[in-house]
Amino acid sequence: MSYNLFELNQKGLPHLLDGVNDANDWLTKRNEIKHKWLEFIGGLPERVPVSYKVLDEIKEQDHTRLHLIYDTVYGDQVTAYLLIPDPSIPGKDQYGRRPAMLALHGTQELGKEHYATLSGGENRRYGLQLVSRGYIVLVPDALTAGERIYDGCRSFQSKPFYEKHPNWTTVGKNIVDHMQGVDLLSVWEGVDPNRIGVIGLSFGGYNSYFLAGIDERIRAVVSICGFSPFYGDHRPTHWGIRSWYTHLPKITDYLSRYEVPFEFHEIAMLTAPVPIFYYYGQTDAIFPHWQAIGECMAELYKLYQFLEVGDRFEAVMTAKAHDFPPEIRTMAYDFLNRWLMEPSK
Image (cartoon, rainbow, N blue to C red; front, side, top):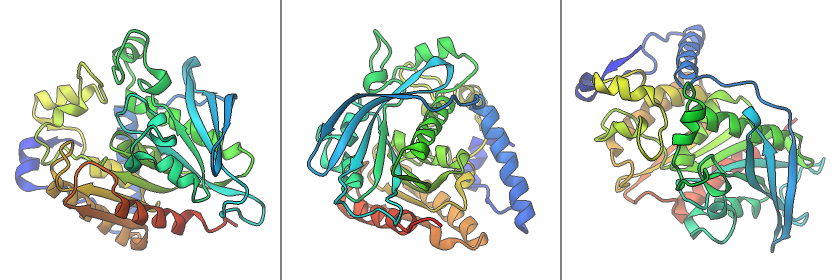
């Protein structure tokens, strides 16, 4: 499976339901795409057992913030904040458990600080906003940000990673690190392991649906300004080798032949039938090809309808920029409440 990028831009997206007539056809196609995706990102190593250390604890107005560090693969560790609502905050079930969220950050040097404390702007503090709504929220630093910036490097410089792991990818690394975060949440006292979701903006937005497409424990997704297909993109090379942050090195070879090995709505379809909320803006300077994004959203919605779960898919577009404005936050949080606040059986 690969596409000529010129033909893709001329003829339009491949249809997700081409060749899919029934549930078995869908599962076959899904398995083929998942296999190719795992191969392309370099695979996912076996995760390590849950192990963490609390470094600090701070009482905030309506929650407690734990500064902790937990183990991940190949001897690495993830720094994170865990936000725990005060007992008076609604959201507990009859067993005293709450839903939990993994809150993934964008390309801010501060990483988790920007999303779990007042350091970030109002439109970035979704960690704080979700804990106030009754969720236990894990806000990790991605490798190259926050407390995980390589020595002597600026934030989001991935060269040291590829020197150590030349046959892997930062995409695979992020997925497994986030899966280790789900492992932690799943055993944390007070978390309902059957009600864990993920939210992210930009870099965190695509890492959110990447995670949900692999980890079946994710029960709801919010992806904000983080969807960017090759189709219609004026600079698809941002997915390949760069001096700043490299996502998928093999893409560079494909693009040199004006080809792509897959399209991102095919990767996004791996999340189905998990409830997912997408937001994108027409004046997004980072991902400006909103028409192409819209076509991908329509294809994904058709898939959810085919699976008879059309109510689990929402895609919202405005004329605004690369951000998470208040009216969209309200819609996104209502969406999460619909799918995660109802206690599991």
